[in-house]
Length: 137
Image (cartoon, rainbow, N blue to C red):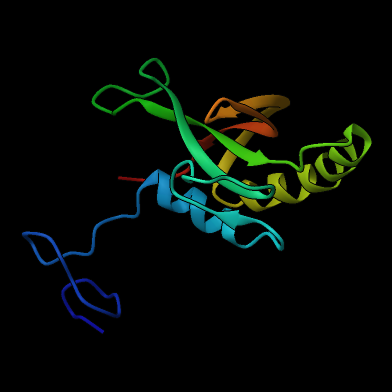
């Protein structure tokens, strides 16, 4: 344990402090806790069903106090199985609450909706969940 930071492990940065995890890293770690989901920091090159990743959506500068930075919002995307629609719906219905519960620990969870994502000119069904991460820089 480092006496400088009170954190175990190596220290980094000019002052020797371990940097705060990014909002993206916090979201990926939360997604990784959901059984059956493969979490990625961004869209994978060859996505398959149950891949999940955050995508930066917007940054709202109206929410902060004076001198504070804006609040970033992310869309957490979870790819669903493609093919027979009733199977896709069943998987989406059973997965949505698990994903939302995992994200709730690290973010304000907003709305969720079904979407189609396009990768290499092929559409894939997915869940989109809007979140505002709770990360203090």
